[in-house]
Image 1 (cartoon, rainbow, N blue to C red):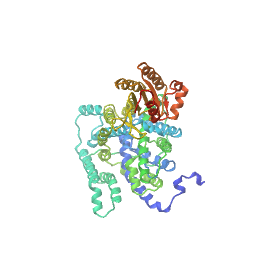
Image 2: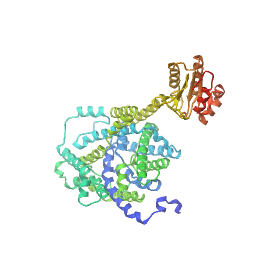
Image 3: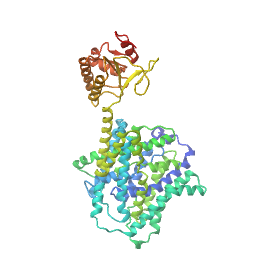
Image 4: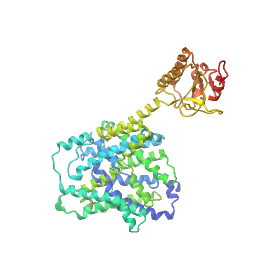
Length: 566
């Protein structure tokens, strides 16, 4: 029977219990306002956020491997859900709730299938600059969307143009009381984040304890809104929240609607996996542990399926909650089980109090959390390191703002792939020379080297494939034509890990063109798999006698030819 238990439970230590209990309580206090706020952001009733917070925690505790990972609703996932479902139904309608459930189920099934097929590498579809731009633009859109409930207005749209047009045509009906409550809550959250930790440390608390207390500030804002706000102000509130445990649901849906949700579900699954994996890797780095991406795919997939089956929506690993969980002392998944238990108690005993929670307070909670995600510094880093990354950042940022988050995901993937193809299609080609007195060959532009008269050594720093074959062939011909008195061209292939059919055809045409110009083409430092492909294609026979084991061997061979002198 012990084999059926998860690893953390079989090896549980008594010394972990205090930290797990503390973390479970602290994360519960943090998750309550977040679950309500993110459900409203997704256009769903607040109880959907509660349901989506419980089932995934229970599933991940037994399937997942990260001890402090806290799986549940997140701001970006909620915005993606709203952006997707708003195209097919109105928020609050029965169809909207049904589609939210199936969106979670579909994304979960896709994640599960990718995990079982060991497709964890799919996380590489989005480069880091593109993901940073996507996250920053999405955070900005979420903040704009929350200005409406913060002030008592209606949300005018899911993209920047829709938001601007909606705000322009929306009649001015500011609710001063709602705006005041929202601004007070936002000011409290930002002030506590900025100075709360240092103040608490001056009072004698440790840095870790102070950090944990600072992160529970949204709970105090929520309690203040419930207990201190006079009903006479007529500030919008959450309203009735059904009490009791979630129930298993599997609503009927048409095949046409499933087909409409398939592509959005895939991109939501991709973004959720990227978020969850990055959080798991961050937590693992702190403890010098490792992360199995395929196992995370399976765990996250089952978490989303569980969320859908209880009436929730897509979920992922939350950075802020997971960090709080770790800093509060979580040493095993027992902390997540205790958080789930705490959420169940809230659902059974405290829903009547949640009815009076002001919506501007929840909006302030989301805005405060999302301000930290505005990572403009990532653009500066990209600009300083690689201009192509900076261009990809700007393109993704603009496309997400203009098209919305759901279309922005596809744009981000396309930008990532286009950047990869653009780079590999223009590989670095260095002219080499020999360091005097050695067998080492280096770039002529960076080192003082010696060369052979009439011999040109060029190294291609990229594999050869259909995306760069034409460009490489053109550059090699140009270099040969621009170098005076060239009679031998040595193509150094030390960086070529693979070639495809297009590249082989390019090499054959290049050899023909160079022969017509009176230049012989040599190949050196060919790796074994590439050499095998050359032999199978017949090019090995064509280059017989002109393939050299090393660049030094090519140098010596050419230096010993008639009329050649070092």
